[in-house]
Amino acid sequence: MQFRHELKHEITTQDMITIRQRLRAVATCDPHAVDGKYLIRSLYFDTPENKALLEKQSGVSRRQKFRIRYYNKDKSVIHLEKKSKVGGLGTKISANLTEKQADSIVRGDISWMRDSENDLIRELYSRMISERLQPKTIVDYTREPFIYAPGNVRVTLDYNIRTGMQNIDFLDTECIMVPAAFGICIMEVKWDNFLPDIIRDCVQLKGTKTGSFSKYEACRQPMI
Image (cartoon, rainbow, N blue to C red; front, side, top):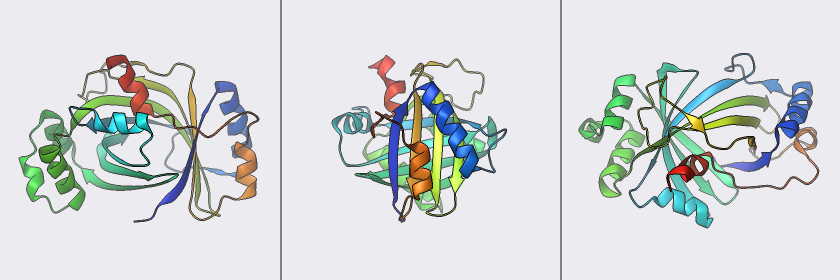
């Protein structure tokens, strides 16, 4: 399992515009993006005691979270993901789900997961039984992704973060979503063994510090 360096910065809209222009000059837009961006919809899982949320708020260095995700309202490709963090390093493993499988998980019909051939699906099943993991909230946002081959660098600019509050029907593309972090943009920088100076210079902003902003946390706050 390959861990990557991850840095996250909370920036202003003006900062984002500046960094976007810099990146366009040296990096490549992710080929999967449409007009340079895509819409991400995720459904996050947590325990009844909000373990994942509390670990994030407490700054626990080793933590995991599960989510189901699709892009640009295209439900033909849905991913189950487990994100693991160890300090400033992170890794992600994923498994494909059909729309029917994703819908059954949302509805709590999970018995089929026990006999899945996929390890991650079986792990989620085990955690849903033993830890009572359950879908908590929908998180929507717009992402502009850039890639730079040396160092396997990926820089993403996320904004227009919205929450489904207590709605978990994330397959309903018309469900009501409300702003969760008005005016906040998130820049994430990820790389393998080294971060090239040209990218370091592009993402450098005076007075900006590495942060730990969580879109999931922001989208849960209205319900806490």
